[in-house]
Amino acid sequence: MSAGRDSAATTRRPRNARGQGSKLTDDIVTAALRLIDRTGTQESVTLRAVAREIGIAAPSIYAHFADRDAIVLAVVARLFDELAAAVRIGTPATPATPGDPVEELVAGCEAYVRYGLENPARYRVLFSDQRDAEVGGYCAPVAIGPDEGSVVLEFGAEAFALLVDGIEACVTAGASVSADVVADGTAVWTALHGTVTLRTALPGFPWPEPVGEFVREIVLRLAKISLPA
Image (tube, rainbow, N blue to C red):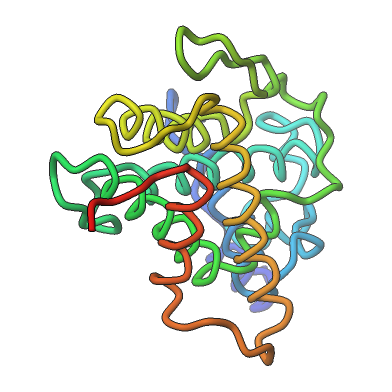
């Protein structure tokens, strides 16, 4: 065997033990994320690039994903979980005042914006218009809001539900006069998304600082929250 072939053999990923196929599935998604983080775009995710990233043959991916789009869709699903974890009250990323629904809501919204600004490449993937909604069956309807009367698609449903639940908690506490928490939650989310997208695209614009105070004002106004003087 030549030295070159010896070198290739030593870098090839060991075969997974029986029952560890799910680990390779996770590794494929993680490799795709590394490519996105490194290049700043999901266009870098190809079957060959992912295979090289984890040291497997490209055809091995087909046992786990039908094609490149299926990998990207799995990346999107993981990133929405990551975003929800950042927003969820009680995580280190959202040090809200326990028991205060307004502060918890604001902290979660600040965490959303912080996640987007600190992870611009990942955030862009979340809302890419190149996603095939039919791949993987991830777009089943999810009921949210009071009495689960509103329906959204599964992508991003958890993070959005946290926002809606946060506004509802403020209504229950008498801090918000919102008469439609889903509509007002949509307004808040639209403003948060715009904040992340525009600040990332136009860093030279004279944006209000600090970001936290700007986000707080957005949330209080759009969630129809009034605080005692």
